[in-house]
Image 1 (cartoon, rainbow, N blue to C red):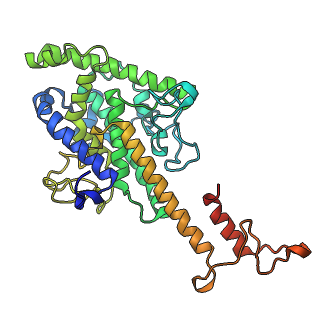
Image 2 (image 1 turned 60 degrees about the vertical axis):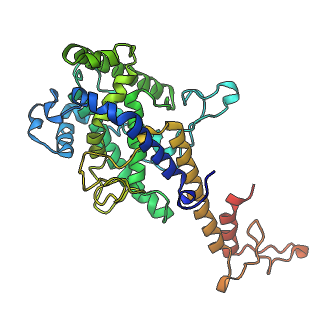
Image 3 (image 1 turned 180 degrees about the vertical axis):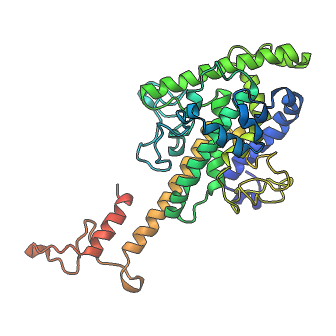
Length: 376
């Protein structure tokens, strides 16, 4: 609908992020201020930190925390494939891999994109609940996952971008998508169950650990804070969904800082969200006017299945454009003229079928290979 104009030219990605911003500003932000102080974690106060607490910057704290011997065994990207943007493992769409997909004939609902399949959260799966018993400790663990997820995306997206050139998405967008997926994991809304049985068991175990951790945080809130907090969470149930939602909102700025630790200067988010939507990010995918306070993205307030659908659509269009340009390049002769080739790679100018003389020109073979993706 509408009358066209500027809004008509916006991508689905823009529309979703603006929708998320509207949800945040109208439904989340005002409540978050009420509960923020009770739930906001401080890395310097993490009881599992010890002497590492001498560091003040998020990236430095997380790096020093990871360097401990016991934490090196929980490298966030362990048991994850380094292939982040490839179809090597295929899409994950079946009901046993995606929560709420239909069981009948494996009819698909949501499909986890390639990037999501190997998200670096191994440390969260192995954190247990004995040591992690307060908001500060949990924040440190989530930041550890975010930092090394960001490092993985930064490394492998650069290769991906070099292949597909003028991609519609840039590094900040890929980081925002993983940031939102981490948010869904923490809030108990993640749709991806995992691939193989062991992976699924680990993800189920992680959700149980998060329930146990938030039970302890809930207990602290009920004991030490105002009646308004007791009213908000007293009907939360053993999943603690509202508490988890508020915790994420209170700590998302620190987690965004962690996921962008490895980003170099000059990377921009795909739309202007800084300075009240008037300026771009201009350093490390962050807003310079409010450094490390407000993430430029609002994907974490967009339903996961919609984000995934848009990511799939963008990936399809990107690859189709690349393959089409490749076919045009391979199937043109000198000066841009058409090559006279058959669909199976024979040079039609030199081939004489009546004499069973089939000539496979090298250029025609390249053209045939380039055209195969467009032939059913």
